[in-house]
Amino acid sequence: MTIEELKKLAIDALEDLKAEDITVLDVKGKTTVTDFIIIATGSSSRHVKSIANNVVMEAKKAGRPPLGVEGEDDGEWVLVDLGDVIVHVMQQQVREFYDLESLWSLDAINRQEQDAL
Image (cartoon, rainbow, N blue to C red; front, side, top):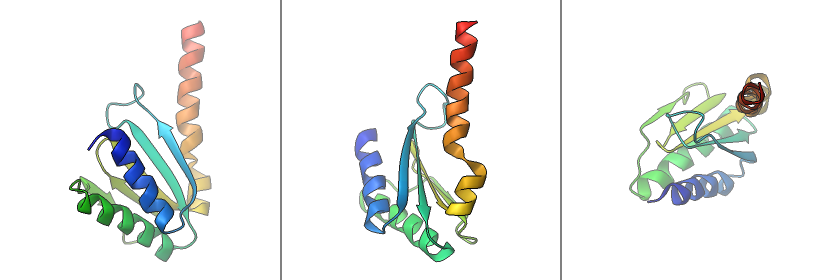
């Protein structure tokens, strides 16, 4: 399975259970841990857990079981590590607080500013 197919599998699994505000961040060249980070929002802890579980189940069906899953007990933020793709499913207030999109964007801006100097 290619990275693009894995990314599509994760997005489809998120959409199947009505995850909201799905964002894909291309982090190649910014980290050696993964190539893509996918962030999605669930409306409650039960919804977050269900969405993340669907990603896990679909990945297993495709023969790409997750390397790890974190945060299932709380359901505020569940991380599903698929290797080349890491999926974060969060409740809205947690997503706003940690603001991962800005964190990665700031990194890109800071690197651009440093390159200009």
